[in-house]
Structures are given as structure tokens and as C-alpha cells.
Amino acid sequence: MGCTSEPAKPLLSDLASSVSHVPSNFIRPLSDRPNLQEVQSSDAVSIPLIDLQGLHGQNRPQIIQNIAQACQDYGFFRVVNHGVPESVVDEMVKVSREFFRLPESERLKSYSDDPMKTTRLSTSFNVKTEKVANWRDFLRLHCYPLEDYVHEWPTNPPSFREDVGEYCRKVRKLALELLEAISESLGLEKDYIDKALGKHGQHLAINYYPPCPQPELTYGLPGHADPNAITILLQDDVPGLQVLKDGKWIAVNPIPNTFTVNIGDQIQVISNDKYKSVLHRAVVNCEKERMSIPTFYCPSPDAVIGPAPQLIDNDHPLLYSSFTYSEYYKKFWNMGLSKETCVDLFKTRQSQHAN
Ligand code: OGA
Ligand code: NI
Image 1 (spheres, rainbow, N blue to C red):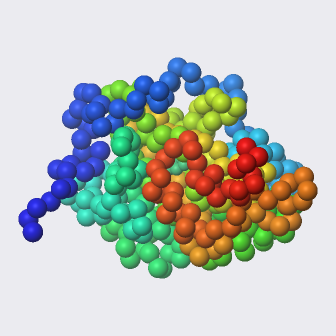
Image 2: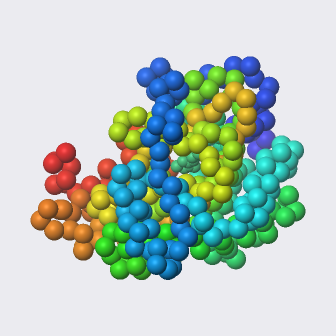
Image 3: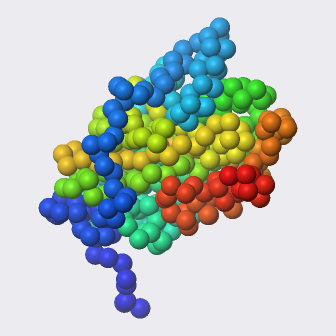
């Protein structure tokens, strides 16, 4: 038809380097800005660092105890000795950087603004529904079962499929170990969460945050809770991730060879709020580009999610009605990132009244 409403430069990375001010569609209202000077450094309040060495041996009870404490107090923890080889992580970071440095025309081959597409490059969060844009581009891939999706992935850089595929396999192993540990830490059978998720889903995002001329005015990602079961985040060496704890934002600065793990909404529901899916955000800076690579481990779209019956008693009444994950996931993408989190929409009527 020759008539297109597509902007000339849909991706932020192709615009960011040519602007000296943040364009108006990225500027947050005054009441919703990062207030970077009020953020606590992670030296003051530290997200727990858990050593997974010996998880399958005599250290298991102590590690499970540490995970329980971290999930209750923070909804976040970091892991070392996680079993994902450093070389695999290094290749993942390298190929991701190379991808975002490809010429615009090459990157745009993967561009889509449809959140339900299983492989796509996009910008901000959901350009179809949001009012203010975020200072981020991202490539998002479904990656389990690998053979169902790998043929959709970019073929440039040439090693992309191999390097990312290997990273996904290794991180999946870690995700399964963490799900078992989290199940046990809730006093459930160790395969309880594994089974509750049905046929597992695994998504990977590569977030690319260009340097920003006015980081006080906008976000890489505003405060949000993750809709999935758990997230395993790899960040490069540039700070930007912040987590909300007791009403204050804490910077979670990068530590080499660690992953940052957080509880998503589905484990909050399964745990009947014993564990919380905590608000977190990504801020940007004027000097350096930043990359973060979250793995979102998810239920099957048709899995029916609800609180584990073993965790319900007189003192712990049922807080959520059951739902399918596909129902939940569509709501998440449509409502946009906000502090009113999606889980609240699935609370039982009684628990809404109690609040
Ligand atoms: C996310 C996220 C944080 C970061 O992609 O859901 O929270 O540091 N990312 O980029
Ligand atoms: Ni997140």
C-alpha cells in the first residue's frame, strides 16, 4: 500500500548517539523520576551472595536455608560457583555486543513490535501501549526447547546461534537446580515447582542501554516485577540495576562471575506470598553503554498456577485464584511496567478486602 507509520529509526541505539538531550517522549513526569542521589549503594544494604559450591553434597541444608532467607527478605540473591563456565558467559557477552554493533539494516531484520513473537528485536517495553518510552533496545528470544526456536534466531554474527544456544543450555541447568532448591526451601517436594510449571519455557533477553545525555529524566526500565517464575540475570561491568528494599532503591552493582537471581510473580503465587516478586529497575548513565542478559524461566502457557495447597492453613489463607500462565502473560504485556504489579489482579476477593 506504500503507506507506513513506522518511524524512520525505530531503534534507540540508532538515535541515541545523535542527540544531546533526551527527546520528549522519553521524559518521565516529575513524580516518576529516578532521583539517583537517593539511591543506596549496595555496600550499605547488600543483596545476599550465596555460594552454590556443594549444593549436591553436605552444604545443601545450609544453602537451602540461605536461599529461604534471601527469598523472604529480598526476593533477590546473587550466586557464585553456579556451574556456568566462564568461557560460555564470555562468549555470550561478546556475541551480544557484536549483535548490537551490526549495521542498522542488519539488526532491523529481526525488528518487531508484537510482544507475542517468539524472536524479536524491539525497543523500550511495549511501544504499542506505553505513553513514555524507555532508554533501551532489546533482543528477546524463546530458547526452550532450543530446537523449536533456534531456526528463528539471527544468523549474524555467524556464531550467534551456537554461542547463545550453549549459554541457554548451561543456564537452564542452573535454573532447574535453583527451582529444586527453592521448592525445598518452601518445605515442598523438590520437584514441586518443576511439575507446577508444566512444560517449561525459557526466554532470553539481551538488553542494550545506550549512554544517555540526561539519565535523571528517564529509565532504562522503570520499576517492575518480573511475570515469570525466576529470572537469572547476567550483567556486564556497568552498574544500573536497582532493587526496592523497605521503600528504598538499592544499587546492585556487578560482581564478576556471579548471576543475580530474582523471584518472579509465579513463585510469589505458588508460595502464597511467603516469597515476594520484588520491584526492580534499570537506570542509565551518561558515559557508558550497558548490557544485561536476563533469562526468564517460565511456566508452560497452559500451566495452571495457584498457591501450593501445602502452604495454606488457618494462619495462611489462600491469597490467589488459579489462572493459566498465558492469561497472566498477556495481561503483563498489556498493562505496561508499573508499580501496581500484575499479581494483584489475581488476588482472591477475600484477600483484596483484607488489604
Ligand atoms: C528485566 C530487568 C534489569 C537490568 O529485563 O526484566 O529487570 O539490569 N533487567 O537490565
Ligand atoms: Ni526485570
